[in-house]
Length: 361
Image (cartoon, rainbow, N blue to C red; front, side, top):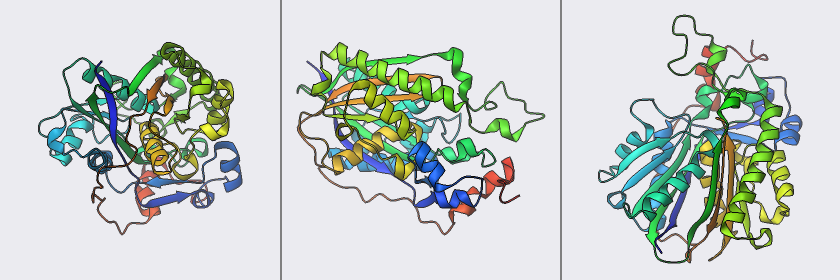
């Protein structure tokens, strides 16, 4: 049987840090309040575009797989904060990689984007049309963060993760998946004015930032991530006690804990790194996967559940059997260009557009 195996993995987190203590200087919040409600201690702010973050993560994933850009047949970029609408961010990632043999396209399923990409990439390989697929989750979310809204500005950060999928006859890869969306409630997590329905003559800056009904998102996230994961496990014929690791979307530690309880998994089987990066949307799962491998949390043959929930409102889950290799074949020397800008320098355009945070006003 033709399967699709993850053979390479990599991440790229920008160097500038925005800590909870930094946010205390901007809005009426505290480290204790943010940590207790979200689990987040800090997040990263990028000085480059999403395509550049994604390209560095991709180069690291390719090196881990022992592949070059010339080997890639297809690039799938999961993002909701890409460089532009036209061209697609995938086009720009291809340019940065010089992966001229690859087709490329974006997938916008918000925070569920990587799971959607994994399912899509696996299907492309299983059909026989492609041998090597690069899946990149990359976000520059701070561009749409309104620091006058303390309910959202504490949650999100920038970053990228990537994996390489290769055709294999081994017993490894995606065992089952479940994808879904409820467009009737898409408004509870949205950027209201960003697209052809926006008002070009009288734009309201606050309508250009992330808007979220937190309690509604929380309830639906816990329900759908748990339900979807159960569906995927049933499709795969895998019992919960057989699962070695749950790698959930890193949106809120309370959502992660509630999902784990709903599935009956103890915390030792759940990967969490939200404290370091916040919510990086489509990048959270590939970044977490990379760190799980670095920390020895994944072994040959491990059964992994990926679960996500995001704007749309989308959700998705996948049951995945890891292959034989857990060490990278090689390491890339790819790095982001250096910057002399401080984190506050990078956020100044947000302050200019959305207005000054309350403690700066």
